[in-house]
Length: 156
Image 1 (cartoon, one colour):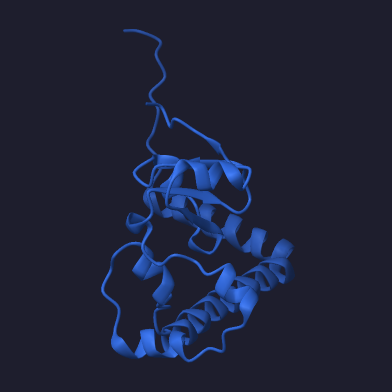
Image 2: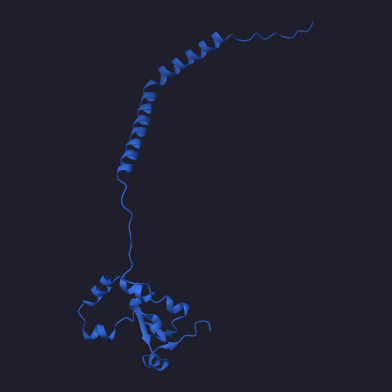
């Protein structure tokens, strides 16, 4: 026969009694800290849920951004008659008439910007990037060059 020791299995009752006693020792040692942590977790969960419920009530309308009539006309988008009539009721003085923005860039043979000294054909990609309020319209190259503008080939 061999001299091997036979290990007796622990009974379940002893195992659970040891776990129970260790749990109560741990509880007695850290009782106040455990209660504090449990309270903080409970407050955090309740606050989170209250925020979720409040957020569901505060659903707002979506923000709608509309383009102005002059931008629509510059891009050949149809405009309602009331928008055009509002624009025409504004008072005109001599300075505004002189710097009036062309509403249709396609009616110009050449276009330039008030902020630059270059002019382009209206089909040029750089011309399409000019803001409508900075757009200057020219009927020919001579008119543009008389005003100090220089022709840009725009990759031609």
